[in-house]
Length: 227
Image 1 (tube, helix red, strand yellow):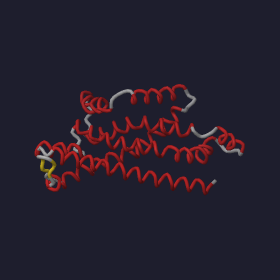
Image 2 (image 1 turned 45 degrees about the vertical axis):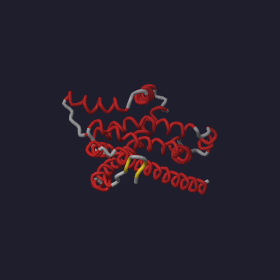
Image 3 (image 1 turned 90 degrees about the vertical axis):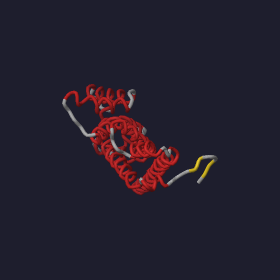
Image 4 (image 1 turned 180 degrees about the horizontal axis):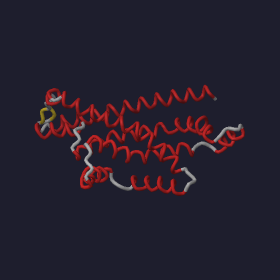
């Protein structure tokens, strides 16, 4: 394919497909691991933010504010290059999972908190009038509704996390963009390499969005049946 004086050579992608797939698999492995861990961290921090205990609330709030007001790249450098000075050596993969979980967990916590606080007090009072305990109200009334409400925001956050993974190349993690940059450096086929990279991120972002919409529809139907 030729545009103007530039002749596209897509064989650079087919020739390097095996190594590209290796980089993609590592990217998806990191993103998938972080997705699971941030859900757990987000819930814990969310309940910490909502706690009436001043110390717990203060620690959770401090964590959220520090993460939201500092750069992900700075956090990566601090852990990857800083910990070895204290004799703590971690692999790039481990640092990637820890830092992305630490970073994304703060945003997920706020998403959970917003979803829980969106449930009207009337429903909570109705649960108490039926003799339900606070944990039962949270489990059977608040969380099912909050979960449906936060799926779109949670989906967006996980897509952002997937698109943050190229920053891991700065600490030597051979994820997909690290591979694409290496190919581009060796071949100087800029457009072919980065258009392919952009297409892959677009494809997986659309797939995540599609899956999230199906999940939201499923939970909504399930909740309506129960009510």
